[in-house]
Every structure is written in C-alpha cells, then in structure tokens.
Length: 55
Image (tube, rainbow, N blue to C red; front, top):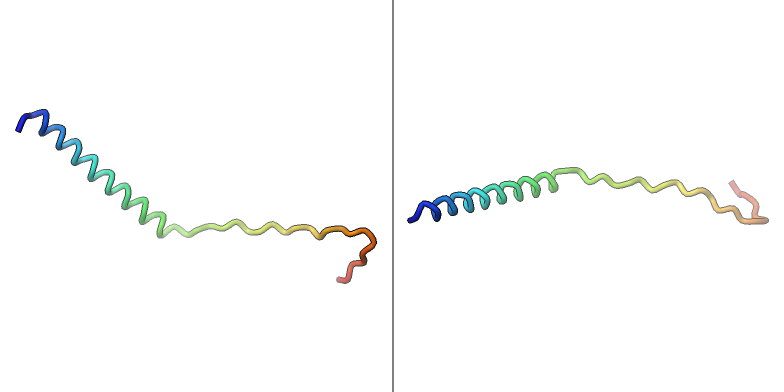
C-alpha cells in the first residue's frame, strides 16, 4: 500500500469516527434536553362597544 493511500485512509477513517461521535452526541443531547415551550401570552379582552362586563 502506498504511503499516500495510507494517509488518506487514516484521515478518512478519523473523519468517519469523529462524525459518528458528533452525530451520536447531538442525538443524545437533543433527546435528553427538556423542550421549553413558550407560555401563551395573556390576550387582553376585546372591547365591544355597548357591551356590559359581566365579571
């Protein structure tokens, strides 16, 4: 095997392992991270002309 092919295979293998580890880490962190949902904003009551408030 030529030295250039050996170096290429080492770099390719390293990138494949690093990518798989990063993908796994991101998947685990996304799975275990609590999802924060925005609270609904309190909408003010609509003003209706001529309507009486009942509360």
